[in-house]
Amino acid sequence: MTYDPQNIFAKILRGEIPAAKVLETNHALAFLDIGPVNKGHVLVIPKAEAATLSDLPDDLAAHIGSLLPRLCRAVKTATGADALNIVVNHGEAAGQTVHHVHWHIIPRFSGDAVHWPWPHQSYAHDEMEQMRSRIAQSLDNANATDS
Ligand code: AMP
Image 1 (cartoon, helix red, strand yellow):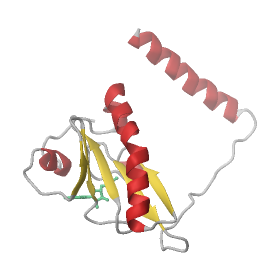
Image 2 (tube, rainbow, N blue to C red):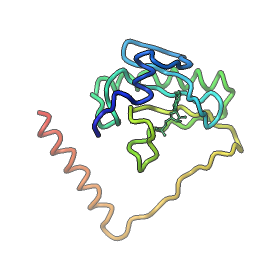
Image 3 (tube, rainbow, N blue to C red):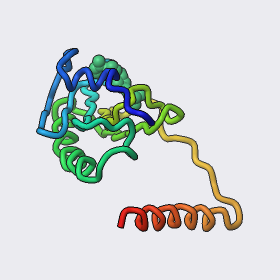
């Protein structure tokens, strides 16, 4: 998807609108979600023009990944949460509303009002092998293009 530099997280990165920041590095920013699923819900974003996770360079994805364990521990300690959901909504059909890639760190409490888990489907006959093969083939093609 084409990156829109007027999206709300780009404005936060440029300092045009405020955010309740909890962690900042040269390449990433973590701040409180303004409409939390539960209080203490944190968003982590890269300082890069990437609309979705697919658009993010590997090194920046790795950097965000390296911050997640620390952020998870801090959110859990600060909120007293029993558990967390770490979620990336990738594209509108998956619920993405802000088109700058972001990770949600959502504190969860036993018996809270959040509906989980998702429904599960099953594979019929050789569907699972066909799907495995399609994804593996796509990875091979991408590797061939990358090298
Ligand atoms: P998503 O639906 O995965 O794109 O999530 C976007 C999230 O951004 C939502 O949870 C919003 O509550 C949150 N959000 C939108 N505007 C702001 C803002 N100005 N500051 C902090 N969080 C925001």
